[in-house]
Amino acid sequence: MSKEVSLEKIVSLAKRRGFIFPGSEVYGGLSGTWDYGPLGVLLKQKLIDLWKDYFVYQRSDMLMVDSAILMNSKVWQASGHTETFTDPLVECQNCHNRFRADKIDLSTCPHCSKKNTFGVAKNFNLMFQTLIGPNSNEDQVLEIDKKALLNLINQQSGKVLKFKLNNFTVQANSNLVYLRPETAQGIFTNFKNIIDSIYPDLPFGLAQHGKAFRNEISPRDFVFRSREFEQLEIEYFIQANDWQKYFDQWINLIQDWYQLIGLKKESIHLLEVSGDDLAHYSKRTIDFEYDFPIGRQELSGLAYRTNFDLTNIANFSNKNVDYRDKKTNEVFIPHVIEPSFGIERMIMAVITEAYTEEIMEDQSTRVVLKLSKQLAPIKVVVSPLLKNNQLLVDKALDLFNSLKKALKFVLYDDNGNIGKRYRRADEIGTPYCVTVDFQSLEDQTVTVRDRDTTNQERVDINNLIAYLN
Ligand code: GAP
Image (cartoon, rainbow, N blue to C red; front, side, top):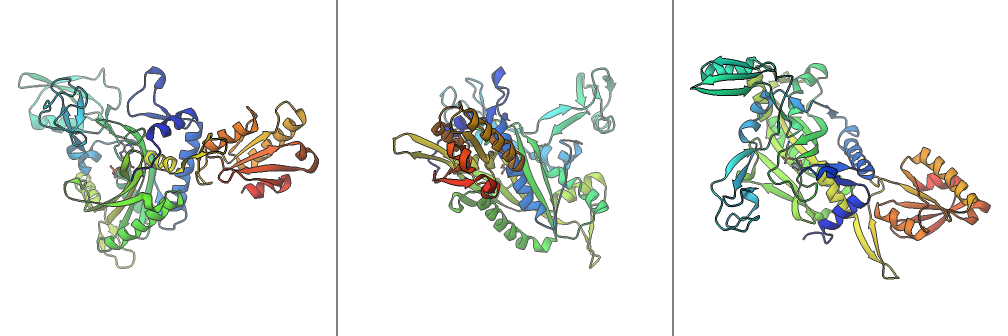
């Protein structure tokens, strides 16, 4: 069952309140890119911090790496991405718009509505390409055969080469690199470094958070399918025989994680991926799906990648990536379990789950983001009851300054009346609103209003930080 909240409401709230904006909007946008505003930055950062805390810092078997986005092209040859990281692309012969063949009804063009205009689907590689190093003045024209061409491309890194081949001039970019389509390869390529420098006991995990890029054929559904996004990935290195045991452990850990960030158990569904849908590297994959406003869709994945990646690295690099067991001295290439999360989809799920509309006594609608207190971008809003009373304003500002130092995520708001301030705070998920009123001037107490219950309590200013924590 889909969530009742529509995607439009979420996109509108995200923009109106400074969470997420369309990328390059001032120039008409750039499809598949999104910018985070002040509240979006805080929500994203808190989610990332919580993820690191839960999956890395609280455990003794996890370490982090932070690898470069640009990597040697051999990484993607070895991983199979240059060959197989593709989506099926079709083009309408009438309007020439292009679509992902597996996402549309191929009998009718979704753009021009003409029937039977699609030919055979082509494999479209999703990796973004760019050129590394200065190249404009370094062109060379050479006469060579095909084998020599490949050798030269491998040797002449950093140059654009021009060749005469069968009377055609071929320009080959030996300086071609890809923007990484997954953070995982930066973990695998550092496996040897970690063994040589740290040599952790097996099983151990390496985690990485960072940008990933995919030239999606049809980016859509807000941040759900973006061309630039962030992944949080773990490669958990194990003995081959143990894979089922650890796979099951990770299923439970991931389910607990989703509850920790406030997603209801019944909104998460496990999908066993089978047959052609399995990625080229995976022997078993479970997709964790969520009931998004756009329907039930993949939120994150869990894959058993065997020793596919490390073995390929060994073969392509001629380097030894063996692990020597500290107790038995057995030497082998470890297998991996890979939990892989996308921050954009988690943010979308967390906002969907938290978005609530309540009809009030006066028939107005109260929009509340019931975010968990750990994720709410702003923890407290401080206000004077009236903004034209200097005594109230001074006291509220004093209180704001001390709360800001202690709790960091605190806002001062004196716009409009107190009711409007509460509504604004609710809409961004602020758990508490603190109001300085005339009684505060006399007895050093303030009202604290709770986002979810809307109940108000008087709290002594001296106990306020403990109360809010
Ligand atoms: N290393 C494995 C891997 O990358 P994936 O299923 O292709 O697996 C993992 O991606 C996660 O990354 C997805 O579950 C999703 O959360 C996120 N993701 C993938 N493509 C995305 C896109 N175009 N936009 C936003 N998030 C994406």
